[in-house]
Length: 580
Ligand SMILES: Nc1ncnc2c1ncn2[C@@H]1O[C@H](COP(=O)(O)OP(=O)(O)OP(=O)(O)O)[C@@H](O)[C@H]1O
Image 1 (tube, protein in one colour):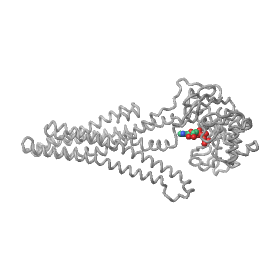
Image 2 (cartoon, rainbow, N blue to C red):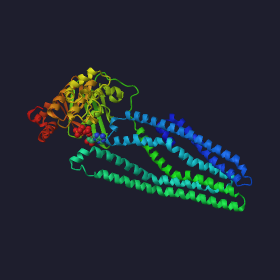
Image 3 (cartoon, rainbow, N blue to C red):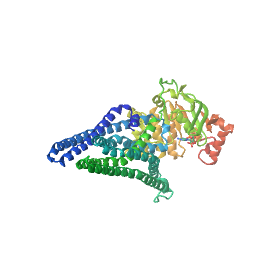
Image 4 (cartoon, protein in one colour):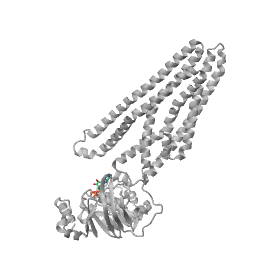
């Protein structure tokens, strides 16, 4: 386990961890040896000259004090190593997550990683600070006492030694039999955590559906499953802990019988037998604690495994010799890409000259957003290449690539800060005048005027205090401020009110001016801004050309708008009258 810990953390932590383990082992051995002093102490006390016990008592006192100091030093070292591992782990995890492809952060992953980053890291790193000392003590102290017993009297030593393989066997058997229940319990815990988050997020939907006051069945089910898994896991742990208790009791009884036999035989004094029994009793507690420590170690090991899996996820490879494109046209050459088993793009080829505007149209799920994501390297293509200015995006440093791209997503995320802070994310170093200019070009100043507090008004978590259209304006202002030569635009699918719609369109028009643009378009009005349209279906370009030309052709593209018009999605006006 320590090896996995060091692999997960990096070997620069090996020294403090090894020193801590050595100190803890020394403390546990010292503790065992201090107990051993009870043998001569009790022998002297019950002998013919009890005053001979004084030097042994002094030695015992000194040994106990020495143990306390060693234990303090080893615990302190464990605590220090634990906190430094914790800090290191957070840095390592943070650095690694920042290098993972954006596509890795899918819905379920967010809950998983947040539980891992909060509870998981603490649990895994707590091994050194909280679990190692009792574990080493529970193993090493009884072993030291055993060595003392063997040295003192081999029959008694052998009687105690017989317990060692039994304790080991019970531990191994418990760990094996618990593996499946532990894993299930953890899975159920995670599932329930996810359901709680979902329940909170889904409150508006539940209330709209008239389920506000009711309990949420999916949450109830997962909580019940969690309770059942927890019960199963507790029950599964019982035989192990019972087995350990039996082994320890049996060892004690055997020692008692062998001791009594030897005492009656006259080969060992009664005082020594008493001392041996006291020693055995002192070892019982640490041995019995092994059951509980074992469970916590197994849980920590599982968390460590999960951390290892996240940290082993390969980040997007960075080129050894990064290239810089001289221009900003885009080209997709025979691009194939799949999400799991689902093929999303299938040998797609497409190009957008520098300064050109391409609208991508197609049915839902055709792969339009994926096309944009491949330009920004949220994922890497499976086959083929995406190029900017003739340079494969994989040959560019991620930083350089992202500096050349401004993205306006359908779902705009705003941080809980002021509008100004949210716009500034587009170019953190921008001066105030530039931020205001971008905001005004995106017609965000109108929004600011309405807000109590103006530029200093807080937008709320996720931008909750702004409407969808207003959030879009912030996103456009960010992109304008970034002033990147390539713009990727994923048009909002839901209808905006006329004022917001006009403002968003005006902002987008300014954003597109003089830049290479690829836009996923859902509205006729947007498509008409493009100088070329690609109709995507089944991961391929089915038709390509100018908007009017494609309409005249009467193929898939024209049919698509006709259906949209028939469904009254707001695009039909353009089809009927030829305008958006
Ligand atoms: N993160 C993901 N994991 C697995 N599959 C995904 C993921 N994202 C998208 N997909 C799959 O890829 C397909 C294409 O998705 P994409 O978002 O590119 O479609 P789209 O054409 O933009 O659709 P829409 O117009 O509805 O937004 C989807 O049908 C979906 O099955």
